[in-house]
Length: 201
Image 1 (tube, one colour):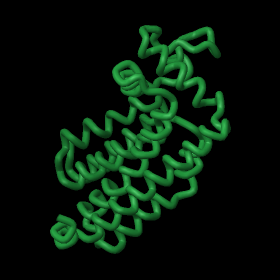
Image 2 (cartoon, one colour):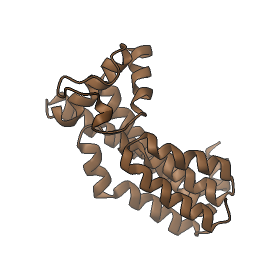
Image 3 (cartoon, rainbow, N blue to C red):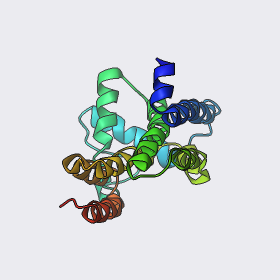
Image 4 (cartoon, rainbow, N blue to C red):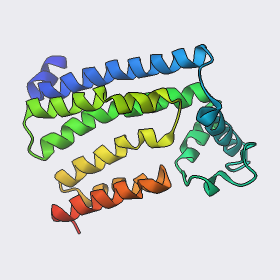
């Protein structure tokens, strides 16, 4: 199977291996922070409580504010994590590990998007690895949990769909950005511009 995959696209295989290693590293780093009591109230404690409360029928309630969390940040995607809390009795470790895995999983998607846009294999690998090595990504992942850190996965997926001329999928993934945070609308608008440029309407 590995040999067949290498014949198909060795660049993708290399990026996928790097992404798996990154997911392990990001998760391990997050758990070291957790196990050594370096996790913070701002914002892991707040978001954990919000997700837990939502999972148990107290929609986006927080003991740190007197108003619903949507009055501070519009992040409907939190309901997805709330479902995991409800169904699987997940906790804050799930938040930080799922964030690490989603961020790392975006690298192969970015590689595929670059290839679809006509970039060479070697340069596409460099772009994907540059993303994984980006210190801003590491800083975001080391700052406990924020749903918008996982936005890269649907954003890169939308880029691939634009290049593949799958415009309905591209539009859906681009619009999903607004579920992650209110200011992510600028990601949606940027992708809409690229979609228009490539002939999507």
